[in-house]
Image (tube, rainbow, N blue to C red; front, side, top):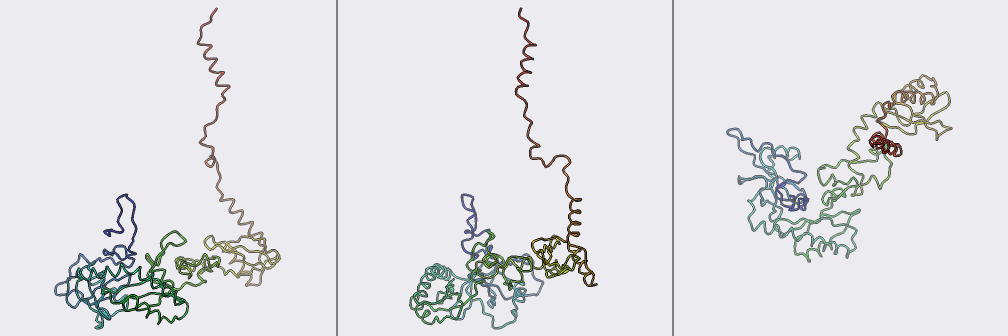
Length: 388
């Protein structure tokens, strides 16, 4: 990367992203779009698309209309229209790909209410913007102290300044509704800026702050995951996971998003799989399913009177027994099916015929030291002439 904060240091160690994806090069942002049309020219007579995509802090992106036909390229710092004053952001996409992104975000390209790009940011705009960004951590700490003093049940997670420094947006999470009117008055008096409070969910908070998950990697929501699909406990049940909230919950306190990653594979495998509440009628009695392994296609059943004695059956065997039960016929005992499976496993078992599994096959055999010394003495006596 060309980013100075992400590049490798003098000692050869990677520094890591210290800007949380907000560096000027936009190379480490999770919403970066590769401009594969950058080296292609437009057809004759076609004007370039007059909208651009601009990114602000914490992956917030918006579309703006370039009415002044400014020569903008990816990475340019621009001053854009805001509700009051102006904001400063970085251009992340230009050209026809912006039209595609607008269609994906369900934004009309011919919408006349789109805000516009004022100009390329001057050095004065960048200095004010950077000065405001440097104040964010201090203001966030001070605002938390004010909220604690007012005994408000809320958590201020992040602060975002407008580019001109006239307004700051405070992002917070809370379980219930919060009356923060006094909080806004106190913060406006302390910081001399306009205050906007915006409530976000716990997943959005984890996305903005980042962190390390239980897998040892960075959180998916802060690195590459851009949409939050609903996760239910049914996802864990389909994958036969123990419903332990401490293990299934992420740093946001909600169910982990990764529970949905393999869910489609499990659902596909369960289509022709017998239900786990199946009951088998055998000659020995009624049997219940105790456990199922989807990928090994094995189910363990036990009799009603012997719940601790499990018998492994294959998926096909269970389906055959269910077909017999539909015809009001009782299947043989579970022991017969389990014995049949054990016999087939023994036939395919690996046989070690050459001793390749021996742990000592590379060890040199120890030679008898007494025999070696005796042989050495005999050789010396033969070579020595008789002294008479």
